[in-house]
Length: 475
Image 1 (cartoon, rainbow, N blue to C red):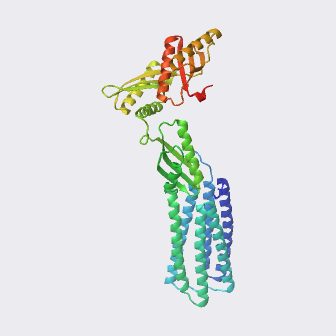
Image 2 (image 1 turned 90 degrees about the horizontal axis):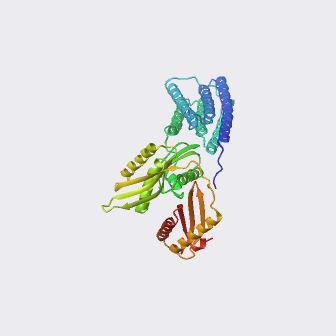
Image 3 (image 1 turned 135 degrees about the horizontal axis):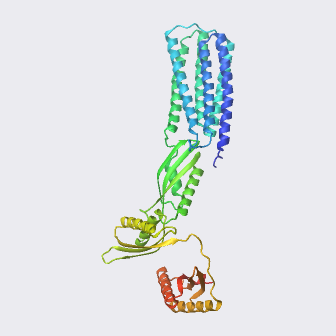
């Protein structure tokens, strides 16, 4: 079962509530320790009180960092402000390192100088035990909240407080040792605490620097598996990720069939983004770069040639249709193609565009010897039907076209003849029924024969469109 995700705004508010509660408790602990230290004369307790104040200051830093990190993306920070939380985490690690250094220096001073033993009473020990219990509760509370909210700053602050537990234990040990006359116990225990503090600081600094230096946070193998499972994706590569557990950014390259149009390829990329966001927690943005998979295209030579030319046309923003190609006796290729381009171009401008297309085609197809491009303007508006034919004339023409088509395709094959007069050009569309198992190549040849026969018999026809279909689709 998938764990429900925490809304980003709710997450920020929850983190801030935890930090405010921890700040209040740390200030309470600091006040208790400072009062105990000043009344008992125990320098170790006073030092521990100031160490607790360091905890409080780290809470303030964390609050500021989380507040800034919650701000939305802007012109100067297009990826958002999430890294400010990491910066705050880094500052906490630095303060922990400073605290470790200061305690370590105190250990050395205590070893080389003689200090007056503090006045230790049962009340002093009891109050220090109470502060230890409070810090223990804070550590457990903050750690659980940090894991639940995927907050590096809460986990770092909890680690800081956990280290404070050992400091308090060392102070308690020093107080007990002082009460029993074992004055050497305090520096030994404190030395062990210093090692733990340095270790905790190192862990925080290492994890924070990993985020700031864009160390990968998502498993590239898992990202590849998710992307490859999307229909239409033929290959995946260049998987990269960065960010933190709560804000992961992923980008990758996918390959799709070069026969896909822009809408299809965009749909495949959107599905990849959706599945990655659903499967990987913390992902806030996924960028998918689409590439055509030419190497694995199992197209025929004709299909491969059409894909190459269509790719060149798409790159120039041109439409392309009526592609004809054949092999010359010397093995070279001759191609004819209709190019569709903006209607507002002059002949010179359109010819320049065609020249660019032809030059790129010669580079992409080494065997190409001749290429003839027919220039067509793309219509800017849909034309209206200029006027209908007189009913008697239209009916006679439909019958003649039906008879001519039946002579080529067989009696009773032609049906649903439609006539359209668009912009002064007469167009006829015919539906012709043929056996369902007829090969497509033969169906295409049949359609061409019918078109030729109709054009020869009816010079008034500007265009003829013949749709060949199996019997089950008849009317």
